[in-house]
Image 1 (tube, rainbow, N blue to C red):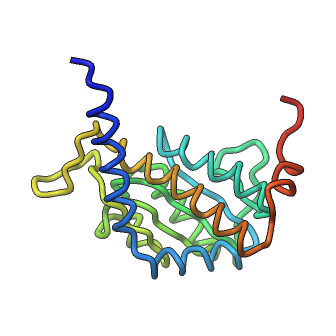
Image 2 (image 1 turned 60 degrees about the vertical axis):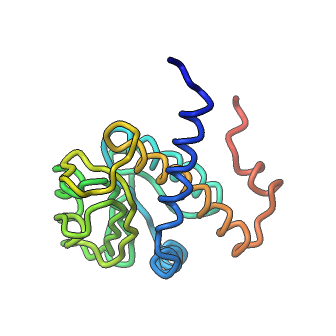
Length: 186
Protein backbone atom coordinates (compact mmCIF):
# COMPACT_ATOMS: atom_id res chain seq x y z
CA UNK A 1 0.00 0.00 0.00
CA UNK A 2 2.70 2.54 1.00
CA UNK A 3 5.51 1.27 -1.17
CA UNK A 4 8.13 3.93 -0.48
CA UNK A 5 10.97 2.08 -2.20
CA UNK A 6 9.06 1.49 -5.42
CA UNK A 7 7.77 5.07 -5.61
CA UNK A 8 11.20 6.50 -4.73
CA UNK A 9 12.75 4.48 -7.55
CA UNK A 10 10.02 5.45 -10.03
CA UNK A 11 10.32 9.18 -9.26
CA UNK A 12 14.14 9.20 -9.34
CA UNK A 13 14.20 7.17 -12.57
CA UNK A 14 11.75 9.58 -14.15
CA UNK A 15 13.84 12.60 -13.11
CA UNK A 16 17.06 10.99 -14.35
CA UNK A 17 15.58 10.12 -17.75
CA UNK A 18 13.87 13.47 -18.24
CA UNK A 19 16.87 15.62 -17.22
CA UNK A 20 18.93 13.57 -19.65
CA UNK A 21 16.68 14.76 -22.47
CA UNK A 22 17.62 18.44 -22.06
CA UNK A 23 19.72 19.56 -25.00
CA UNK A 24 23.35 20.16 -23.96
CA UNK A 25 23.60 22.76 -26.76
CA UNK A 26 20.55 24.68 -25.52
CA UNK A 27 21.84 24.37 -21.95
CA UNK A 28 25.20 25.85 -22.96
CA UNK A 29 23.54 28.74 -24.80
CA UNK A 30 21.30 29.40 -21.80
CA UNK A 31 24.26 29.38 -19.40
CA UNK A 32 26.15 31.83 -21.62
CA UNK A 33 23.15 34.19 -21.53
CA UNK A 34 23.06 34.00 -17.73
CA UNK A 35 26.71 35.00 -17.59
CA UNK A 36 26.49 37.96 -19.96
CA UNK A 37 23.25 39.61 -18.88
CA UNK A 38 23.24 42.67 -16.66
CA UNK A 39 20.11 41.79 -14.72
CA UNK A 40 18.06 38.59 -14.57
CA UNK A 41 14.42 38.31 -13.53
CA UNK A 42 12.41 35.10 -13.33
CA UNK A 43 8.66 34.77 -13.63
CA UNK A 44 6.51 31.76 -12.80
CA UNK A 45 3.47 30.86 -10.73
CA UNK A 46 2.60 28.23 -8.14
CA UNK A 47 5.01 25.39 -7.46
CA UNK A 48 7.08 26.38 -10.49
CA UNK A 49 7.75 29.74 -8.81
CA UNK A 50 8.88 27.91 -5.67
CA UNK A 51 11.46 26.02 -7.76
CA UNK A 52 12.60 29.26 -9.40
CA UNK A 53 12.96 31.06 -6.06
CA UNK A 54 15.57 28.43 -5.18
CA UNK A 55 17.45 29.49 -8.34
CA UNK A 56 17.26 33.14 -7.32
CA UNK A 57 18.71 32.50 -3.89
CA UNK A 58 21.59 30.29 -5.04
CA UNK A 59 22.50 32.28 -8.16
CA UNK A 60 22.49 35.48 -6.12
CA UNK A 61 25.13 33.83 -3.91
CA UNK A 62 27.12 33.34 -7.13
CA UNK A 63 27.11 37.09 -7.84
CA UNK A 64 24.36 37.19 -10.44
CA UNK A 65 21.97 40.16 -10.28
CA UNK A 66 18.86 37.97 -10.13
CA UNK A 67 15.41 38.32 -8.62
CA UNK A 68 11.84 37.21 -9.24
CA UNK A 69 9.05 39.32 -10.67
CA UNK A 70 6.92 40.64 -7.83
CA UNK A 71 9.70 40.71 -5.25
CA UNK A 72 9.80 43.75 -3.00
CA UNK A 73 13.38 44.32 -4.20
CA UNK A 74 12.68 43.84 -7.93
CA UNK A 75 14.62 46.27 -10.14
CA UNK A 76 13.43 47.49 -13.55
CA UNK A 77 14.12 45.40 -16.64
CA UNK A 78 15.43 46.71 -19.93
CA UNK A 79 17.87 46.27 -22.79
CA UNK A 80 20.69 43.90 -21.88
CA UNK A 81 18.59 42.13 -19.24
CA UNK A 82 17.21 38.59 -19.19
CA UNK A 83 13.70 37.41 -18.28
CA UNK A 84 13.37 33.68 -17.60
CA UNK A 85 9.79 32.48 -18.07
CA UNK A 86 9.20 29.12 -16.40
CA UNK A 87 5.89 27.45 -17.25
CA UNK A 88 5.32 23.82 -18.19
CA UNK A 89 2.46 24.73 -20.53
CA UNK A 90 3.85 28.09 -21.62
CA UNK A 91 0.31 29.43 -21.43
CA UNK A 92 0.01 30.63 -17.82
CA UNK A 93 -1.44 34.12 -18.17
CA UNK A 94 0.79 36.06 -15.76
CA UNK A 95 4.17 34.81 -17.07
CA UNK A 96 3.11 35.28 -20.71
CA UNK A 97 1.93 38.85 -20.10
CA UNK A 98 5.11 39.70 -18.18
CA UNK A 99 7.16 38.29 -21.06
CA UNK A 100 5.34 40.59 -23.51
CA UNK A 101 6.14 43.63 -21.36
CA UNK A 102 9.78 42.60 -20.90
CA UNK A 103 10.15 42.10 -24.66
CA UNK A 104 8.78 45.62 -25.25
CA UNK A 105 11.41 46.90 -22.79
CA UNK A 106 14.18 45.24 -24.82
CA UNK A 107 14.99 42.31 -22.53
CA UNK A 108 16.01 38.90 -23.87
CA UNK A 109 13.38 36.26 -23.06
CA UNK A 110 14.12 32.63 -22.21
CA UNK A 111 11.39 30.02 -21.97
CA UNK A 112 11.82 27.01 -19.71
CA UNK A 113 8.97 24.59 -20.21
CA UNK A 114 7.47 21.57 -21.93
CA UNK A 115 5.60 23.21 -24.81
CA UNK A 116 7.64 24.27 -27.87
CA UNK A 117 4.54 25.68 -29.62
CA UNK A 118 3.31 27.70 -26.64
CA UNK A 119 2.81 31.46 -26.38
CA UNK A 120 5.80 31.77 -24.04
CA UNK A 121 8.04 29.75 -26.37
CA UNK A 122 7.10 31.97 -29.32
CA UNK A 123 8.05 35.11 -27.36
CA UNK A 124 11.44 33.72 -26.33
CA UNK A 125 14.84 33.94 -28.02
CA UNK A 126 16.32 31.20 -25.82
CA UNK A 127 14.71 27.91 -24.85
CA UNK A 128 15.25 24.96 -22.56
CA UNK A 129 12.65 22.33 -23.29
CA UNK A 130 11.77 19.78 -20.64
CA UNK A 131 9.96 16.50 -20.79
CA UNK A 132 6.87 16.36 -18.64
CA UNK A 133 3.15 16.68 -18.43
CA UNK A 134 1.45 20.07 -18.57
CA UNK A 135 -1.91 21.15 -17.24
CA UNK A 136 -3.13 20.87 -20.84
CA UNK A 137 -1.80 17.33 -21.36
CA UNK A 138 -2.85 15.71 -24.62
CA UNK A 139 -2.84 12.03 -25.51
CA UNK A 140 0.62 10.92 -26.56
CA UNK A 141 2.47 13.55 -24.51
CA UNK A 142 5.09 12.40 -22.05
CA UNK A 143 3.25 10.35 -19.47
CA UNK A 144 4.66 11.03 -16.01
CA UNK A 145 3.59 8.81 -13.13
CA UNK A 146 3.56 11.93 -10.95
CA UNK A 147 0.61 14.29 -10.67
CA UNK A 148 0.21 17.35 -12.86
CA UNK A 149 3.53 19.16 -13.49
CA UNK A 150 5.50 17.69 -10.56
CA UNK A 151 8.18 16.27 -12.83
CA UNK A 152 8.74 19.66 -14.48
CA UNK A 153 8.99 21.40 -11.10
CA UNK A 154 11.55 18.83 -9.89
CA UNK A 155 13.61 19.18 -13.07
CA UNK A 156 13.63 22.97 -12.67
CA UNK A 157 14.76 22.79 -9.07
CA UNK A 158 17.58 20.36 -9.86
CA UNK A 159 18.61 22.26 -12.98
CA UNK A 160 19.16 25.31 -10.77
CA UNK A 161 21.63 23.28 -8.72
CA UNK A 162 23.33 21.98 -11.87
CA UNK A 163 23.68 25.58 -13.08
CA UNK A 164 25.11 26.59 -9.70
CA UNK A 165 27.79 23.87 -9.96
CA UNK A 166 28.67 25.01 -13.48
CA UNK A 167 28.92 28.65 -12.37
CA UNK A 168 31.09 27.76 -9.39
CA UNK A 169 33.56 26.12 -11.76
CA UNK A 170 33.39 28.88 -14.39
CA UNK A 171 33.74 31.69 -11.85
CA UNK A 172 36.19 29.73 -9.68
CA UNK A 173 34.06 30.25 -6.57
CA UNK A 174 34.70 27.73 -3.81
CA UNK A 175 32.40 26.51 -1.06
CA UNK A 176 33.77 28.94 1.55
CA UNK A 177 33.22 31.94 -0.72
CA UNK A 178 29.68 30.76 -1.29
CA UNK A 179 29.09 30.38 2.46
CA UNK A 180 30.39 33.94 3.00
CA UNK A 181 27.56 35.24 0.79
CA UNK A 182 24.85 33.18 2.52
CA UNK A 183 22.46 34.63 5.09
CA UNK A 184 23.97 34.49 8.59
CA UNK A 185 21.04 35.46 10.83
CA UNK A 186 19.65 31.94 10.84
